[in-house]
Image (cartoon, rainbow, N blue to C red; front, side, top):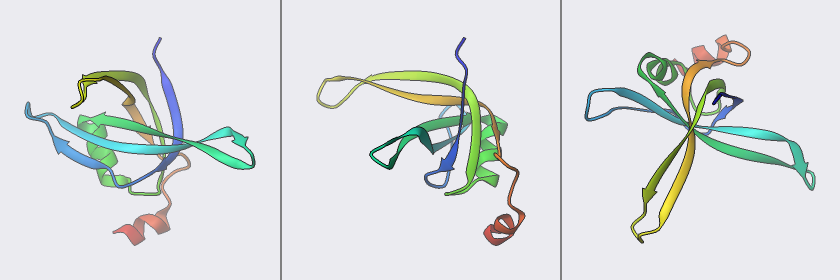
Length: 113
């Protein structure tokens, strides 16, 4: 089973685009703090996410840099060869569901509009 759930904050505003084949996708990065601290510093992971179709449109419409976000989906790898001819691999989440962790802050939402 390939299932992952993360909860964190958006590093920057989501980027919404349409692929050459006409599919809509929204890319964003979530900063997720680890429970274990390194020498009194929080360790943070930055996880790339992709939300397709209506889920992507939802993210693009309602989420902004700094907003809390809960994502569930599946972890996927992408392999490619870089400009130096080296094999590379990147990991990210393809989102099945995206939610506000504690509901949308109405005051912050009004300020963004």
